[in-house]
Every structure is written in C-alpha cells, then in structure tokens.
Amino acid sequence: MTKADTIFKENIRKIMDEGVFSENARPRYKDGNVANSKYITGIFAEYDVSKGEFPITTLRPIPIKSAIKEVCWIYQDQTNRLDVLNNKYGVTYWNDWEVGDTGTIGERYGAIVKKHQIIDTILQQLATNPWNRRNIISLWDYEAFEETDGLLPCAFQTMFDVRRVDGELYLDATLTQRSNDMLVAHHINAMQYVALQMMIAKHFGWKVGKFFYFVNNLHIYDNQFEQAEELLKRTPSACQPRLILNVPDGTNFYAIKPEDFELVDYHPVKPQLTFDLAI
Picture 1 (cartoon, rainbow, N blue to C red):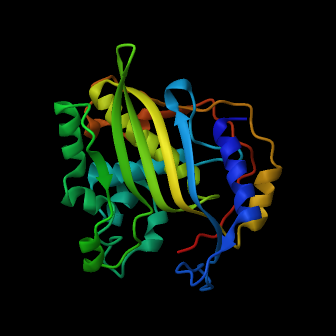
Picture 2: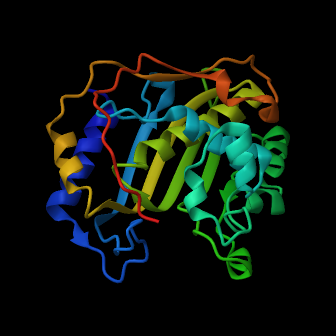
C-alpha cells in the first residue's frame, strides 16, 4: 500500500463517517438534479517526492496523461480556449464548463496566467534568487470573475520554495484548493501539480523535493457513496508508482511536452469505476 492509498482511504472513511451534508449546493448533475455532497474541511497531506512518495492512488486507474495535458494548456499555452484543449491535446472534459457559445471557460485558469504573466515572472524570480519567498501562482482574480461567467478555480494557489540539501537544490511545492472531489479529482489534481513542479525543477536542473497539499472543502457527492464503499473494500496494489520526466536538465519550461512524462510501476486495481460529474 502506498502512502497515497493510505491517505485516500482515511479521507474517504472520514468523509463518510464524520462529514456533513452541503446546503444550498451550486453544482447540478447532468439530469438537472442538485448535486449535494458530504464534506469535511481543512485536509492536509505531505509527500516527499524525492524519496519516492507520489500522490496517486492504486485503488482505481487515474488518467495521468489528460491531467498533464490540462496543466500544459493552463501554464504553457496560457489560454482559456477549449479548441486548443480539444484539438491540440484531445481532452474534452472541460467542454461541460463552456461559457455560453464563447468557446472558452471564461476568464479563468490559463487566461489569468497570461494576464499576469505568472509563469514568466516565477521563472525570472527563481533565476534571479532561488531563495526568494514570493514564488506564488494565484488564479483567484476577483476582477476577472466580474468580467465573465465561468467555474471559479478549484486549484487556485501554488507556491514554490527552494532548499539546498547536501549541495543539491530541491524545489518544493504547495498546492491549495478551495474545493475538491475526493473520488474523481483528488489524485488527478495532486499528481498534475507535481508534474508542474517537475517541469519548473527541470527548467533549472534542480531535483524535485516535497509536495504539500491542502484542501479546504473535501467532498464526496451523494451519487458516489456506493463507489466510495467499493474503494474502501479494495486491496491496494503492491506497486510503487513514480513519475519520470524524460528530458535533459535545463530543458526550457515551454519546450516540455506531455509525452515527455512516464508513469512507471503503476498497476492500479480494476475495473475502473464510473462517476456522474457535477457541473
């Protein structure tokens, strides 16, 4: 059992046993019914990626390629356009959040990265002084929220810090989420931001250090309780998954591609479970 599997089961059990039900919920299922959820607040996890700890469960298959493609769409392409995500990467699940007939998800995610030149600023700051304490991605932009409709960012803040250990530089990352779907998105979001951490570390030729993960509202939707119980019954795989970025140290951040990543020793338990998403 991996550390991620242990945390996954603990969180599912805590939500099912101690969670409370949402009230006045915004999301709806595709059939139009209100998507209520059971939730807990203030959940934190720490993974030392340098020691082989990787935040992905083996209790069900996690689609890592589409998750990494989403990160590239946001932080490399820096766009909110769905045609880029659909045509360049073949990823379509964001289409359910299209705003009207704009072909976009509104002024969100990649549009905010571009508006504030976030990645270029962080790369410059790290190049100038790796030990500065201001390497912050914030996608929470009230002005943009007033300009257009759109889903407000769930994974909205990421922070980076550098440590020197035995002469080697390590890049640590902290991801903060306001809201997270425990069964569907939890390990997708965690592993894709480790991928972003790896991309920045590779840009400078540094090692990947620790990954810290904080979720304010961690929930299971009321149509997922059966799947939650199934996951609790499953015996985790004995594998120890690791994500590898197969490019040379010093490769420019913007030159890294989704196909450069390889997830090794990942043998998740099957069959895959199905979930009706809340929109």
